[in-house]
Length: 271
Image (cartoon, rainbow, N blue to C red; front, side, top):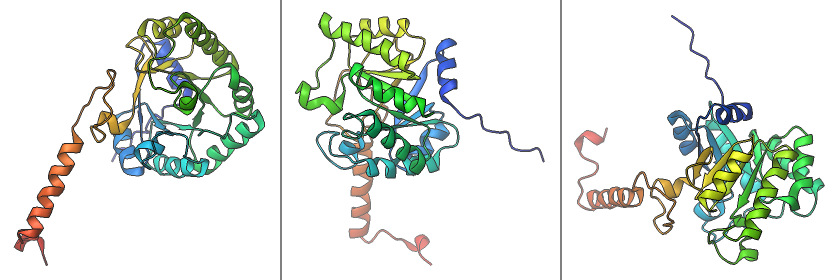
């Protein structure tokens, strides 16, 4: 009997080589063991344990309420399922913005307690010291520019960002600053496709787009949106691959009907 072939694990180095080789990068959010296992087995390159858990798992209207310990809980569940993909974990709002020492402590806590591989922070120049501090401790960092949901109270809206030249120029500069600070990749969210293409081509590190066009080095979606579990969110950039909202409700309705009608369990479904 031949030994099992060793699974080749995705690392930050793998992701950077994918950009160099022109291979697109796939990324999807997950928050629990079961879905993470399915995504990993399906061949996803990166699982993001996003602070979007605040919305899709806990029912909050923004990402702001979720805590560091709650993020670690979700990350632990995902990491237990992982065999090959890279696991990136959002540092939630309030755990890195005030100073670089707090940011480093938050990143270390996430890495030690979750077993994840990298952390993600939102922002540019204003968080560069935190990025440098975390990277210098040996923790890989993914950046995030454009629409940054943790800043929703500053923006007041989820509209497309960097449509004006001043904001676009800041994004260009921030992307270079994040690369120079040691980020291994950057998420570009909801910005004009032409700007995302320009930024992606200007960087040696990969960009992961969400609502930023097809010229980014990879793409990410929230699993609940992509699988059709959440049907209220209908942005232009979203492609739904399933309609689980309808399918799950239909299955549960049939289950209820079968119980009420005494059809379940039948003779073959009992001992």
